[in-house]
Length: 413
Image 1 (cartoon, helix red, strand yellow):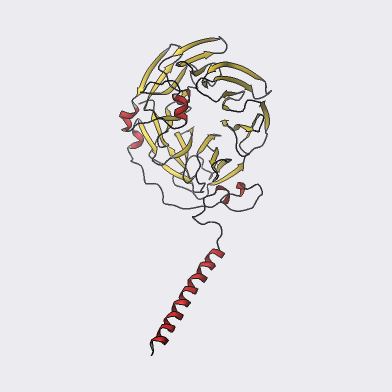
Image 2 (image 1 turned 30 degrees about the horizontal axis):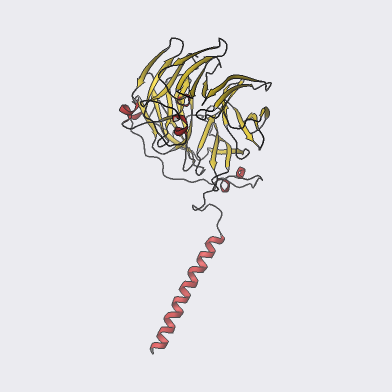
């Protein structure tokens, strides 16, 4: 056989092999059903992710279960609930004890943790990529999930509800029967807060902000706010009251308003306070607020008695949670470092972090006692955000702003 014939044969064989590979590739891509791991858009996975009903089925994965927690971990005073970053958590008391639900930032998988046992189960495998914020309500059955689209500008918001197997809050193992239903809300909502099964949200246009209340499914929507003030933070205080505070900026005068959820009537509660940040008690009888003007002060204000008193130690209202059993008591994470002018804004922007301890503050008796040195107990610095208190007030649940891990603290130990 001549060399020329030999090279021709080799070339033909290689050509056929390459054609086979190309054909195989196009067969696979032609059968692509949209469930490829390469996609990362929330809308591709949910029928409610588009404005039209596509009838698609949410993508469900079956990744490996999380590694079992240390069986003795749940008996500790301070417990790390999740090593992975979470977008937000909900808490509910049931007959057996207190349960936390959280949604992972990266995957959107929902987990349920029993604080009275070592049990932690994934209760939903539905993938919701890159959820950056989640606000829970409706007894930890529903949440408002928010994520930033690929343009790094558009914020999408979805109301999600876990449809469970009949045995509520008793999942001894993950169940594929748990599914997620959802409702798409308007894009670029200014702010969201929840109370029970109700949601308050702000829509913004060029000239104003408009506030609505509705159910988690978007039904029974009612407008209760319309104002040229656009940059606002909301707190759904109780069934009758939504509190709206202008977004804080050091040295800029801020205002707090109460909005009646039935009539939509508005009352100005605080005004012309520099760098104002607030937290209203559940019965709306007391307000703690930070003023960030010439100096940084934490104060308490009683709207009925119209008195103001400074509080110590100084912390951000965002690091506190009010007791529902005693409207004069709150639990706060207090930085070891002193708080100065502009620190709230730089903390918001992520330019500075703090290392906190947990304090119990009694505003009636004007006392404050440290409950726990967090860094000593945890072995790492914790910068507390999104504190929650269980209804029985046994547990304080919070996230660490440094890495978005989730923690619980047993206040009875």
